Amino acid sequence: MKVLKLINKTKQWLLASILFTYALIFIGGFVRVSDSGLGCPDWPKCFDRWYPPLHVTEIPENFTDYYDNYNCTNNEDCDDFDITKAWIEYLNRLFSAITGLVMLVAVFYLFKVKSNYQTAFYLGSSALFLTGVEGLIGKYVVTSHLNGSIITIHLLIALIIISLLIMSYRFISWDNQSDCSDYSTEQVYILRWIFILMVLGIILGTQVRTDIENLIPLYAIGPFKYIHSLLGIGTLMLTGVLWNKINNESSAIKTRNQIKLLLNIFIVQIVLGYFMVFGGLPAYAKLIHMWFASIGLGILIYVIMDVRLSKGA
Image 1: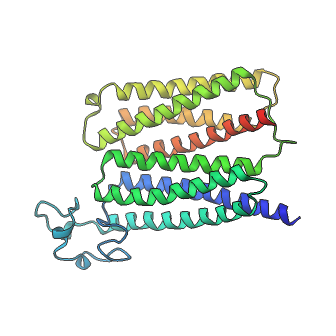
Image 2: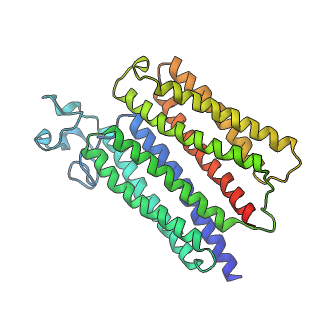
Image 3: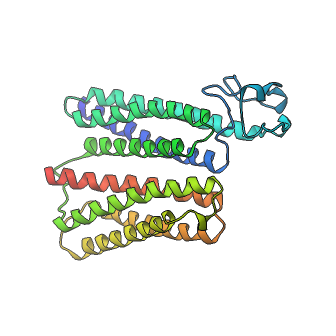
């Protein structure tokens, strides 16, 4: 009975870690689309304080002698500095620390059940380690003055963290007596290609987004934007084929709802993509597009884990 309660606690904290990480990805995306990445020009403090200034008068007069911040450069008046952006970036850092603590508790419970769920423990521990790495990369995002490549690495590691947490959760929550699915070889093959196309699409999408933020017009970005669009359409089509096969073939699939949700997310992603192209690239659309991509990847990882565990049952 105690073991069952311990496993349930572990699942609850892992689920909380997943939800907090997704919330953090959203907040990080909001920081980016609101141009708040340099709201706090130093790290880990903010204007050499443990909380942001409450008013522009609290910003050091010699601020530009120490920090090359985009709000106060080229002899601009520091009164033009946007305090709101400092608080947005500060809350992002604060929420990152809270997420790390939630994950630490989850790994603590994973350690308690390590004898029965060793793989889940190592996956969760790896996620916690990478979360610490993310914090350090956050420092270099600031000190590099929002270098696009470092921001891309920052996002990709966040996606790896969420994948590891979902894999760990699936190992803990798996019950081979009731959760086992019966995937055909063709369905597994399609799933693999969906994963490959989606990962490539995310990587190219981050490159397109970096170019846009560097004020490169869409028409000048080159073939990346077309390949990104084709990968998105291909991912949607393959998911549609998979959904059709699952419905038409007499096989027991426990992840029908997840695959249906994945299909709907890909539809929304395609619509959002074209809306951004023809709608002037609004910030909120870029944020939702990025966040839905991370959710879609998480769902896909969940389904792939179901395949692996079902095949190994």
